[in-house]
Amino acid sequence: YVNVSGDDLDSKERLLSAIDYGQGVEDDEHSTTSTTTRQSTTTTNMSKKRRVWCLDPIDGTKGFLRGRVEGGQYCIALALIEDGEPVLSVLGCPNLPLPSTPATYTTPYGLWSDEEIRESVEQQYPSSSTFSATRGCMFVAVRGCGCYEIPLHVIEKMLAPTSTINGYDDESWTQLHVTPNDGTSSSKPISQAKFCLGVERGFSDPNGTILKIAKLIHGPDALTPATDDGDDNNSEVQDIRNSLRMDGQGKYGLLSRGDAEVFLRLPKKGYIDWVWDVAPGYLILKEAGGTMTDVRGRPIDFSEIGGEGRVAKLPDYVE
Image 1: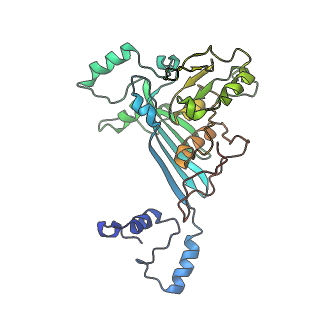
Image 2: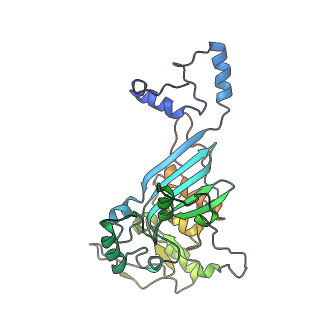
Image 3: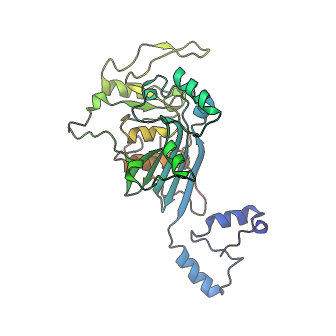
């Protein structure tokens, strides 16, 4: 038993104890058992699953600051890890275009049209809906149960006091599957695979390695002609023709619903990968049939996350 009254949460230790409650962490102060019983109980409790919640309240900060009209993408990313394995993931993507809507074909990706801006202004005051019928979705994955997508405007209607929508109705949720590569009629050859990449190229590919990989996959015409990058250094850059760029872990949602097939991120040496930047998208992609590895093809290692040291950093080889 842990008393979580205000008096008990006035220190860092007490707050962390409350957070850890239920994970096999013994609470000496409030335990009424004898020393012998406590030792036995501690051994039993430590055999419980080690549960760690990982939350990034604004994943894709630069996309959030870029603004929704400019197509800036961000998400609320949440994952539950049990004994070193993600078992539940949720990505809430307020500005992500819904499948096959016009904004999925724009450059930059997700750019608002003049018509969409005008309709948004006209509906703002008054408005009975917060979310557009063409934007905003939530991706949900549970280990062993698949990956699903639901529009945010549908969730909004579900939560309305007068709603008659059944939240468990199969029509409200779409199960997602990555683009197949098994040679069937619905599959896509690797030479046509679309890259889904981050907007900040200096961060995700400082050495241009991803561009070289694209040429190996797509052939000699894989890249666009060099253009001014818009920076003060007047340097010129190339991009992958068959690609889209966006911020945040919403990329994993696009891969999961077959809007793209390849996501590579090769940040500069020394960059730290925090678990909340990886775990939510990892399970979304995995449950849709996709695979995520490090640069050497090894599975992502979440085994050290949590524990007494409250480890939040992934191994250095995750690049």
